[in-house]
Each structure stands twice: as structure tokens, then as C-alpha cells.
Length: 330
Image 1 (cartoon, rainbow, N blue to C red):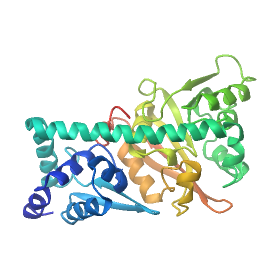
Image 2 (tube, rainbow, N blue to C red):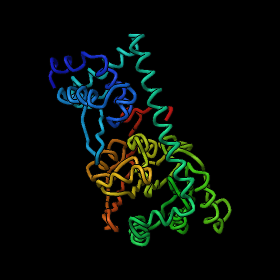
Image 3 (spheres, rainbow, N blue to C red):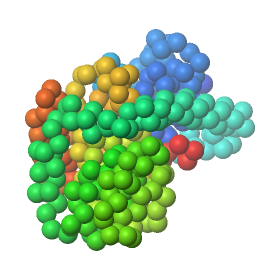
Image 4 (cartoon, one colour):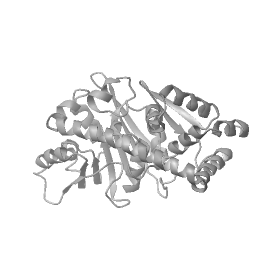
């Protein structure tokens, strides 16, 4: 990264807007094009300039390309990048017109994502009754549950099952958890989970409606946080894991069950997937950035896709707020 290339890349109002959006979260090129009101080829040209200057980074996932900032206000090893990030923050605060444009861009992004989340919510409502069957189309439940039971042998303490669905995983750990909190955004899913878990002792299970990007729990509330086939629905997985870290006690465990990276593009439209799985490198970076030390993982061959189980241990004294800034409205 050079001073001259950086300032040349930033000498354009559209590219300045892109950098302020990327400071909030990783975004797909199509999302940037919608927010900016420009064609995707034109936005791609702006992105190339930013990436060539070392200010942004691309990541391809199936037919989509995602962008993230390569500079941050704090925690960066590159002093120039850190300084530039701070300059952009100061510019938004000092320049009223630029600041208003950035705020409008973020509000537009919230609206775009809200529409997509509403579509996903409709999908879950329509398919709640056959959810276990749909999930097992990719891999049978037995091998996944056996691997989970082995990785989480012994007491799991206070368990948070994020995106509990029908409550199947919460039921699996009913004998080893001191208390289970089963969270889902869909009321239809929670009704099914309540029926499945009704045989458990009163007060042992709490069913909570909530969003995995804004968990309605106090800091360090759980010893184990589990995402079972849930993270691929996250538009901003880094923000979701930052929230998971916030509610995980130091030394607690995070478990992610999800697809290895794949190219089944039809899953975006047919089953509301926001992400086409994750690579080991992606998960390691997400875990580390959220304040977890990556631990043991497993790979399980499914019918067509590979399912991975990744685990991490919550490090003491790590704050995630500055590492993954996000739109508080999401």
C-alpha cells in the first residue's frame, strides 16, 4: 500500500461511499450496486481500483463476489491503513454533505437487507413443518449428531442453541446441559420446538424468539453456543459471531455446524441461503476476529455436500466491538 495509490483511489465520491459502507460489514457487489444506484459493471470498476490500491479485498463465493475493507481504525498492522481509516471516519463527521450521504447509504442497505430477511422468514414459515426432513436432504442427522456428541462430551453447561428450528439439537443435549436456551427468529419454528421439548423439566428449557445478529442476552451468559446449519443464512457472519462471542463466557465453547464451501448457487433462491458454505480459512478468520481460539474440527461427507463442524474457545479479555463494526439496525 502506497500513499499515492491510496489517495488516488480515494479521490472519487463513489469510492469514498464504498469504503464507508465496507467499514460496517462485508458486502456483496450486487448489494453495493443497489445502495449506490449504479450498474454492477460500473461498481466493479470502482472496486478494482480500491482493491488494486490495497484498500479493499475481494472474495468469490459461487456466482457472487463479496467485498471487505482492508483497513480498520484499530487493530491494523499497517499504520497507513489505520490512519486512512481514521481519516475517513473524521471526514464523515466533519463534512455534513458527505456524512448525510453515508447515513443515507447505510439506511438504504438496511432496507435492502430487511426485504431479504423478510423473504427468508417467509421461507421458514412455509417450511417449518418439514424442516427436519429438508435439512436431512444434504446429510443424515445421525452422523452429525454423533460427531457433536463426541466433540461436546461431558457437561456443556449453559447451552444456547442458535436457530433451534424444531428443537432437535436442544433435545440432543438435554442430558448434558445445565440449562438450555433455544433461540429462533421464526414463531412457527418455536411452536414446533416447544412441542418437541415439552417433556423436559419445567424451567430447564427457555424458548426465545430473537435475531442471531442481536442476541437478547447479557454478556457471558452461556458456556456453549451452538450454530447448527444456521450460519449460512447470515448476510454478515462476522457480526453474528461477534454477538456469539459477547454472550459466551471466557473459556466457553462455540460450535458451528455448516457446509464446507461449495458452488450450489441454486440454494440461494431455493432455500434462502445467504452463503454457499465456508472454507476452513474463512471460519478460522471469523473465529479469531470474534475472540475465539480455533479448536477441533470435523468433516462429514453428506449426500452431495460436505458438512463441517468447527469449534472455538472464547478467549478472556477480548472485545469484539471494534474488530467487526456493524449496522446497529440489522
